Image (cartoon, rainbow, N blue to C red; front, side, top):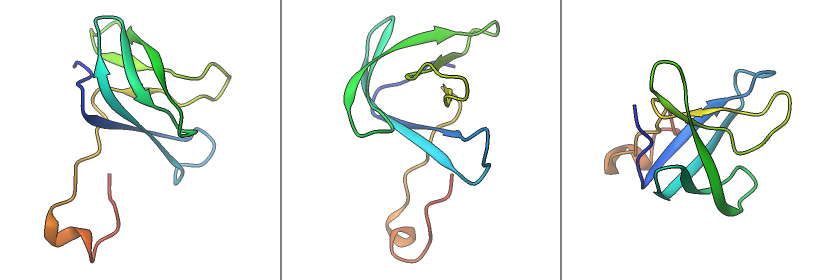
Length: 89
């Protein structure tokens, strides 16, 4: 799978399954993505490719950093869901 522009990717924390991180992808080139990271900073992140050919982002480099995979996108809520339902990934 490929990372697409104008999507939101999510990753779960390794230490707490209920903690969910998300990054917004504004645009991309062949090797980088323009993102809004987990700290609220807009910056570029390198796009990596795994053995299956799927793309992923790892904007931070520490031992338990979240990895945002192309298949983990947050679906936008429909109008009738916005007022009553919590955001579900």
